[in-house]
Length: 474
Image 1 (cartoon, helix red, strand yellow):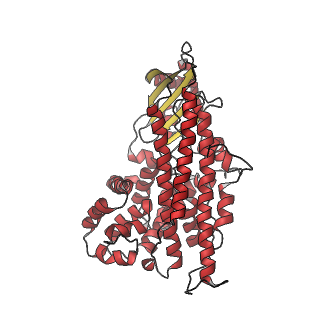
Image 2 (cartoon, one colour):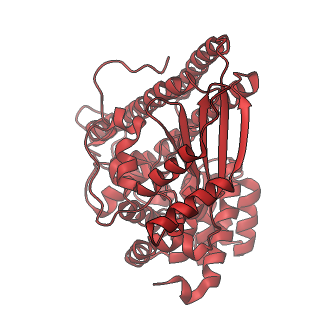
Image 3 (cartoon, helix red, strand yellow):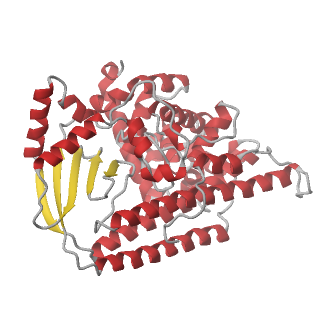
């Protein structure tokens, strides 16, 4: 793939609705006779796999096309992800990056060597950021504009993109301008030549490799959901391996994208035009856990109570998944505060609680209230359905946290000596362990390092919120 899109736009919601519809139910026959439950289930399975492939390809086409446009002006091309919001000006010569994890805003400008940007330009960009809310940022998202033609639903209460910045500018307009000017004056400023280097190309290639690995893991999750839907009980589900042809297609697609990126990047490296990049890095005021979580507390309290999960767990998952970035987007892609994949966790929630096979759209998942609902409901499914066989509540909590990131099947795999992802064979061993032993075993044996780190982070965050006690609640 070259990243250039062709043909009419197809929305993610249209793709998923068309291809995910119609789960036929659990199969009971041994042979897939035409019209049988098993035949219908196998047809559904093929539809589901095709849906994931089309869903991901549509997103990656838009991602690659926009990144190519950015690389026409920059020697790197950071785009929005789980913990960062990245916006480019229409002419692609200015970039604003909000890092929710580090609490920084970075504004960078590509310019001629004799045209260093005026601090007033940086101040104006900060002022513009103050005016943005989640809805307007969603509407202006160039990648999602290629995928979703339908406008996002209106949010009941506008949510600012950077609450810490907005809080600094409360008060008279004159004072606000003065504070903005002071923030720019205190910024860390760096100017460097634009240079298309092998190191920067390697970083871009690494991002493509991460997208490939995320896709392979999501294919595992799809197999798990198919097995869970077919089994009479979650304990009896035994996910099949990802078909080799499907894995090979993902790897092949990734290699094509890497080759296209290398060709385009090397062509840019031969451009003799001399440019510089000046960066202003602005540190936002530090925020306590309570302040970072406060904009989302009302919905988190409501949804955690409705779906019978701990408020502290919902907030900890939110922090680990997005650092409270309501515009978070990951490689799969997953969307929003609690990083919901529309066609897996999103559809699972819809089927269990809304009697619908239609997965949520990206527009819906960018709405904090709906995203928190989906995330809380999925935690409920993991706790009260898929992992209900774990008898100790604390042990089950650790398993739920890991499963939120990697699926219940990979939790089972950590405990099965044969490497299978069958819960039924893992449960006796889990239930024979003390909770702390379960936690340590997961840290040592979960299949993916990312999930092992994720479990540690969420546990730490949850303990931090628990320490706040009643002061956390509104």
